[in-house]
Length: 268
Image (cartoon, rainbow, N blue to C red):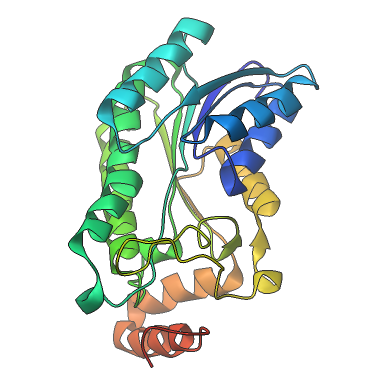
């Protein structure tokens, strides 16, 4: 990964921040993007202390023009792109019947359209470098999670889009990785949206039983090195995907019961 140009969205915290540190340690040229420029500058300063080449670009991935600017700034600075990691994302927690439709739109704008915009503008450069497009998705992109209608919908859409991107470019050596962590100790649940669009606040789940952001970043890093098509993490996540193929109705009940056990679950 030395001297590879890597663009990471949602890099101000969680998996994105851990990925930035992992690639910087490997000698890559790292472009970090997020809405919070203060956190980006702090991270860039930290990475630069280890002689990493870093570019910070304030980016709201739900904005087509800001995604275009992110790619343009990267190419101006480093001359091309080798790896694009679409990591920026938000979640939600509410019953669909109670959810304001603007919440669904916002999740689609960030999780799905953010991936589409960045991939569209980066694609010519990635085809030239025979590079990698990565989508940090979720097990919710394989199995609908109750209370997360917008989140599951956006991740299903992301995965469908990335599969098409892979197939269309399979003779052009474009690598496309769909990475699906299970529940991870990241900021995404703390910033998850409630039914009215307000932030959920404290996570209802036990963080001690989750995979760390650093471990997820390491597994994604290795999967990119090996140019894997798919990465599904945690034994629970892998089991969910496999069983859902053969016993979908049974898994509906299992997923319902599992998610209903969350503290303050919106359904029982």
